[in-house]
Image (tube, rainbow over all chains, first blue to last red; front, side, top):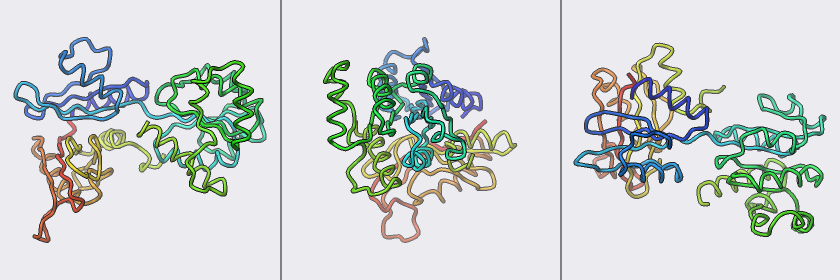
Amino acid sequence: MKKSILLDIIKNKKNRIPCVHITNINTGEEDLVTASSSDINPFLMDTIKEIFSTDKGRLIHLDGEDFFLDAHNPSLNLVIIGAVHITQSLVTMAKLHGFNCLIIDPREGFATQERFPETKIYNDWPDEVMPEITIDQRTAVVLLTHDPKIDDVALKIALNSACFYVGALGSRKTHAARLERLSKDIGTELLEKIHAPIGLNIGARNPVEIATSIMSEIISTLRNG
Amino acid sequence: MNPNLLDELSIASQWQSEGKKIAIATVVETWGSAPRSIGSKLVIDSDGNFEGSVSGGCVEGAVISEALDVIDSGISKVLEFGVSNESAWEVGLACGGKIKVLVSRLD
């Protein structure tokens, strides 16, 4: 691999531009393409588009030669509304899974740098922060404040974004009340996107275990859809 | 940041900036129950230090020794590993899968 290609892959990842690294296995020739590259073999373009969406590279045979197409999608983002006890464990786990984490909580006592070292924190309301940050198809949004004043505002923004996962903390009863409130502004189809009660049912009993169940549900949604 | 939390290409870039010679091994094809998916990477330096993986630890030893050749010669290699058979010392995948690994030098 050429150094220039390695540096471009890292740069694209940082700038959230999906790219595919093509290596001719027979000759060693290589190229890095993005969706906006103009000089791509039209036959390859369909495969490349598929690779962007599935995040899975593959080996293909073309005109007697083998090409390896390697997927390099932007890193994953996790936006957490609510700097609560569960959030402390969830941030630790999500970082291990390669997520960039960002916490939003207008309540200053909660979202402190001491409780969340090396994590980006916004002490503002979700509707002030969320329009300014990246919430794309590589982003998961989790609502953990348990406070409708904060969660509902964030939910409305998350449901209208391209994010691949939206989960909200609360019992079935709490969620039913939430749906009732939100149905005035948001259609049923969008509301069905909310994962609630949040997390896979693993019988979680404490904040760390709830974080495990949330993390598992995020990964399951990313990988299995 | 803890190096274990960096992706393999970032590690490769960091090692190269420290003046190390590096090879990158990538899983390019899998059949059956392969332990790691296509695109998984193992980064190796000329001293045999490594980060990442291309299997569950089953074939890394063999890949690292081939990578040292690639670092010397600059010529990429494609390695194939299948099910390990009765010959106890042969390198293979106990899980029953088959993988193809491209090893190339970072120039």
